[in-house]
Image 1: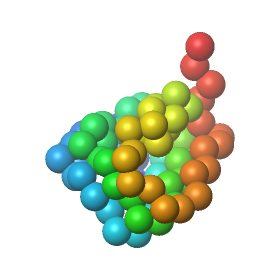
Image 2: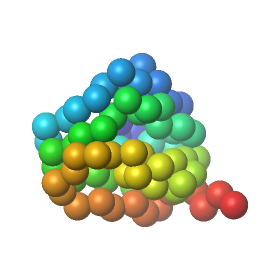
Image 3: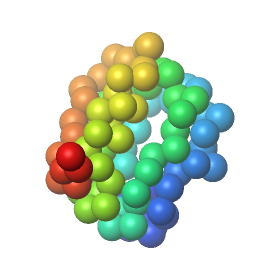
Image 4: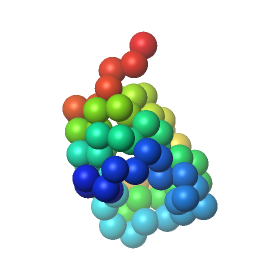
Amino acid sequence: ARGSGLADLGGLARLAEVSGAVVIDGNPLLVTLGLSGLVTVGGDLVVTGNAMLCAAEAEGLYGQLVGFSGVYLESGNLECF
């Protein structure tokens, strides 16, 4: 979603499995992930540089995965308390 200007990825809510990496990087408008159905990522999960996305959203996505075989990286997102 790099530079695409998407506010959310809710259109991908039914996506359950990605065989490779998931990289969500550098989207200044992204406020929610909306990837509620994603349970398996076969590569890295990278959620970085999304200025309006709460870091807790990325952490929640990582927490919902039951199948994961890569590296998790979260940085440069909004710290919401």
